[in-house]
Length: 119
Image (tube, rainbow, N blue to C red; front, side, top):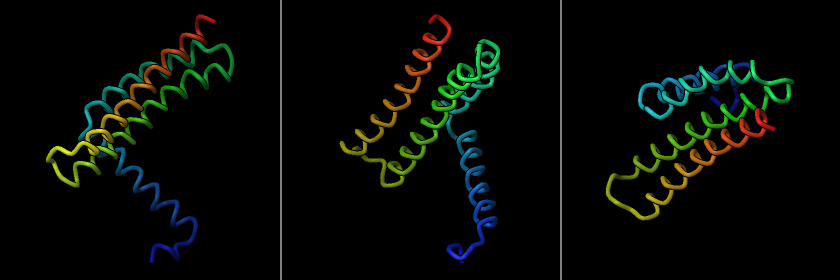
C-alpha cells in the first residue's frame, strides 16, 4: 500500500510520477515545448550575464517559474477538460486564470531580466 511506503520508495515513485508529467507536457503541450526551448537558450545566457550568484539565480529562477506555471496551467486545463467539453463559465474562468498566471510569469521574466541587466 502506498501510504506505508518507506521514504526512499516514496521519493522514487514520486520522481517517476514527475517524469511522467514532464513527458506528457512534452508530448501534448506546444506552449511548454516552446518555453522549454527558450529556457535552454536563455538559462545559459543568464548564467553568463549574471555578475553574482544572486543575479544568476534570479535570471534562471524566473525562467524556471515560467515552466512551473505552464505545467500548472496545463494540469488545470486537463482537469477542466476532463469534466466536459461543453461551455461552462466557471471552467472558462479557470482556464483564463491559469493562462493569466503564465502571462504574469512572462512579465516577471522581462522585469527581472531588465532590472538585473539594466539596473
